[in-house]
Image 1 (cartoon, rainbow, N blue to C red):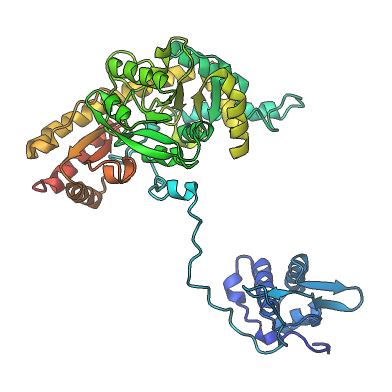
Image 2: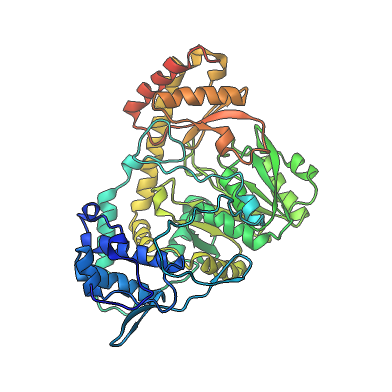
Length: 521
């Protein structure tokens, strides 16, 4: 190595490289190692300001690596401001100011033997206890699940029936359109409220098929129902506001409702749905969240009389109802119930309506909608723009084509038939294999939805049954994990999804449960 002035880098042999471990990408891997070790010596003060580094050629020869590896390492160090190159003179350590936690300047150390990096501080840095932090304390995102059709995974539709080939053709057609020199190409930013054509089609679907008269100007396209709930909460609630929520209920909704510092209060249920009398007893409440068409997770359907009482309460108390039409399309007798929002009959909008395509198409699509009074939409769209700007235009355009060409309604009918068939197969197998084991294995009625709720006597029973089911590869949802905030309800039970399981596999899974649950209650 050519002579260099002091202070200088430690002998090249002190740079501990591992070329054997970089066989797949040796150049990039080696340059990262060189960069990291020189950077550590500079930050530790072992190379003081002005220390001259070896030339790239000399260091490459000493380490027996390519000069390009050293060049890349030096370029990265220079881009980070750790070294500076001087024309005709070489590369030198930059002037750095190192401060301690008390902001007292610490002089750089002289060059010397390499020292190990200091151990990390074992004391964790806690997030400040903001309203956001508090709202998320009792919420865990749904675990990522791989595959489809596993019994009895809840919250999923019949993914095996999704028309992949058709969706692929629509996507390919969209991208072919974008390849043309078209000034209206959809590759730039879009309307935060959603693609106008998609909003028109959603409004038409809700008006004609769901019995909810609305206009495109009332529809905000969201990233699924979860974002719609969060946007409604952020728009309507202030810190300290009180929110009523069904108990047991949807835990992710409880977290979203509390993002802005609102206090989420449990409202108990009965066989007709949310108890309006219990809601009145809470005193002032700004907003109430409900899933009237098919309550999650119990499956209770709110009666017409209870719906009218809830709307009357909202008008009398200057409050709002956030209606999540969870599984509303999956009704197995007659036509799906009209949303509660349709009962307002032109009165001042007190009901915001939330819907999603996750249970009709596939959850990974992440498209849903919020229906609100038209004069609210500009503000709601600005809020959506602040959060994540807009939904993916390609997905919106493909969904719009899927709906406009009639594929969506045909798919909904097919999904409804499949869900009914799988529900019937599930109930038949359960009645034969599990109901005889214990009276508490008697299933409630399942008039709608994609899952069934099995009430249990205690959380201990819930845990025992869940653990045994998991041991034989069957998924069941524990109410303790999915049913609202832990402080909301002492109830226990299991949620079993039947819609994602092919009919042929349902009997086998039920028998497996019967074998491991025998004698546990």
